[in-house]
Amino acid sequence: MKNRQEKVLDWAAATFGPVARNRDERAARLFEEAAELAQVEGVPAEVLERIVRRVYSRPVGNLANEIGGVAICLDALAENVGVQVWEAAWKELNRVVMLPQEHFDKKHGEKIVDGVANLSPIGDS
Image 1 (cartoon, helix red, strand yellow):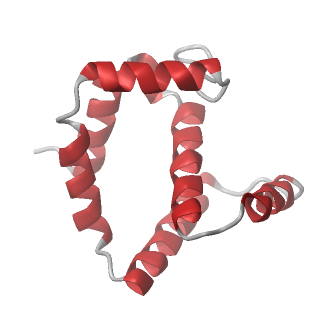
Image 2 (cartoon, rainbow, N blue to C red):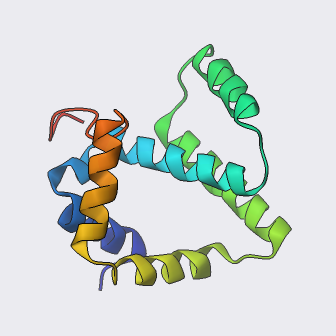
């Protein structure tokens, strides 16, 4: 039986095509979701811009460590607000898999026009 991560990547690839397996695309989508989470919590865009400038002014980290850091920060925020991460993730996965393909085609097309999706040729990262 596939775990949640495998199911999510399978869904993303079926929904968005091969570009969903590009690492830069996945990282950009993660950043987008993190920015939306910060927006919900009232973090001003100017603070996020300062964070981006600071991060990009420093040496590049280790991928596995940074994934762990994202997970730890998400766990701490979720605990702080009383949300169970895995429960929320399963609920969101069950919600999105029920949406029609046209919904995602429209959203993804808008992101392409805005220059924030399809960041590298398919299969390049």
